[in-house]
Length: 371
Image (cartoon, rainbow, N blue to C red; front, top):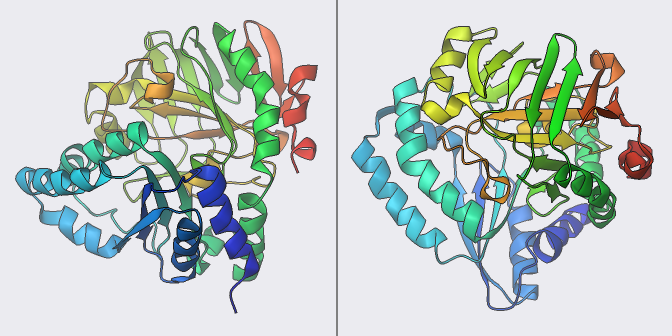
């Protein structure tokens, strides 16, 4: 029997997240998903909305095999084919799963750089800038294990997170967006962290179920050369299949001048992918009340209640500081007391302390008001 929560989930994605209209084309990409039920639900909802569904099934292990030996010419040709299809799409849904989050960890760095630059980046840019898109995970035992939960408990958690009232969250975010749009100087303080930068003139973007599921962040970007100080991230992060912990970045005039972690050599190799990888492309504040702890899945971790993420690499055109890179690496700092606490200041005014908003116009974003 089909889980009724799955049909609700699919309906929210098609009707709310991408707001599919009659006659629109939508690409549904299923990556590592073994259970076909969500795809079936999505197809049914697309037809109910009057749209045209297109399906792509991918396996992470097969992608790894292609990455291992692919050439620049092959990746470029492959990308051109995929890009032509993406240009025919009005909307895009990606559902990602898989048994092994480190499947591509042994792909040589040079091969991964070729893949990201010549295959992935052109398609990514088209999808980000010219379609209505939403990206999500699909629960499986591997994700449950990462979250430290039983499979059944994780499924309950997943649907609580993904099926919350995102329209209510959107309304609550309006005051934070307005404040960020009026802010010049930002200061982040936490354990071994003191970082300052400007967001003046960049603009803030609310994320309330229209681009990611789960969702719950407001993002902008620092003025490119304004970042100074040090940030110590306190959550693990996966990049290209490799797990990194205890990342510490030091900035001078926007550029990362020192970077350490449990694997400093590989960290710096990624940050040397291109010039833009050592500058920041995104600053965001996470507010999802159901996501409290990291699980090495960035779609969840970057939305953690009481967190921020500060992202080396590519900026979004919707909050553009002009930084360009084939890297976009969301790294998360949680500022709740059990993770060491911390503060956010906007123009020298404390707006969040130990993960809770402390000025009246933002209190509606505290977790008890979003559930």
